[in-house]
Image (cartoon, rainbow, N blue to C red; front, side):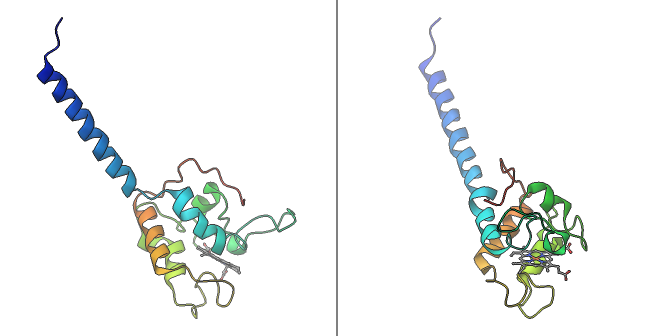
Length: 143
Ligand code: HEC
């Protein structure tokens, strides 16, 4: 059977459009491991972990373990599962705590205990939560 050249051009055209649009969509999505993890790692992990520098077990601050997806989903002892609510960044305690002024007692990191999360990074985390808070392939771990 002879394939019509016009048909072929059409198929190639559709494949091209699908490829370009899927790429555009992928670019718009926040990549947890590439974009969010480094922020949490440098600004939150040292307190919200279950291991000290020597690998000995300890309690994460506020009962909130941030070094695993399960810990983030479970939340802390006060707000429980409200720490990260997929699709609702404004209701998520994680966002609420990092946008507070440093002097607020609920601000994270606590006053004088670490660098604030920049406005740019705050927006990135908001975007990640509003986009569904997808952890991708991340399985957790402090390193
Ligand atoms: C120096 C230690 C320290 C650092 C760094 C730190 N935290 Fe905390 N965090 C705490 C303590 C202590 C509490 C408990 C506060 C309380 O009970 O009033 C807490 C509580 C929280 C809670 C509330 C949990 C709940 O449900 O009650 C959230 C959310 C939180 N931290 C997020 C963060 C984020 C996000 C970062 C990084 C930007 C961070 N923390 C960095 C010490 C820290």
